Image (cartoon, rainbow, N blue to C red; front, side, top):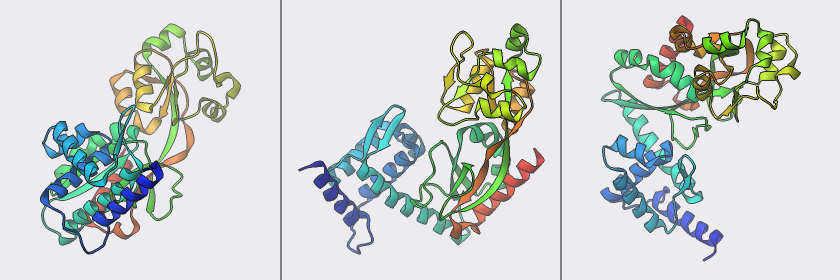
Length: 321
């Protein structure tokens, strides 16, 4: 059978087994397998799914392998950072995410018991703002169970894989309710040892230091220079001893800067811990960025108690600094 025919056959099987056909006869084993699949699809990891289910990674793998045998197609493929969904897996994930999300939200609407809220956040916001403060929220709302995913992937709200997303961007997304919660400004940072060694006394001195770049997401050095009144050409990609390093996240850039590898450019609103500890110092003025952090949820669910509670608490935390 060709790949296209196999996909179409698998899609029909997925729709037959998970669609609203009225002839479903799912066993408890099927439901456990679908639960394992939904968690692995959302986390991109069998290990994380196993931890959340309190079973072994091997057990998760066996449950998903059973689904793959039923559907006659692979649901996951191996990626450089874990597992990624295959085409048939993406189709099934849209169905299972919506189904488990509907069940969770049905419990919320009943107003009793524990309410699970699945939150996706850009990594630097999750690690440097959200997670350090979540203990306060959980103390105020012990009835809410939070599952936080730190990911640069655009959370698929329609598929039901998350309930709330804290996204970075301009807020122009279709079919969701979005509210701007944090404006961002980029500021250069370096370790005190590097500042002393390279004699970085003024913002213009940064141009001769190794610059840490973040790819594919991150603030632009030339843009920061222009906003700071400096020549952007002095901060363009370079060669030679002061070339610097490239990393894949702002959190990694902060760690690299703390180890003296160069000067990092990070969001001023999210570096409190590095500044207070003395690991890093500011080297120039903050420059406003075009993107902001947005609180995003499905439009019809803005009034759910758990989502309203998280939004209200988050806005208060941001306002208080």
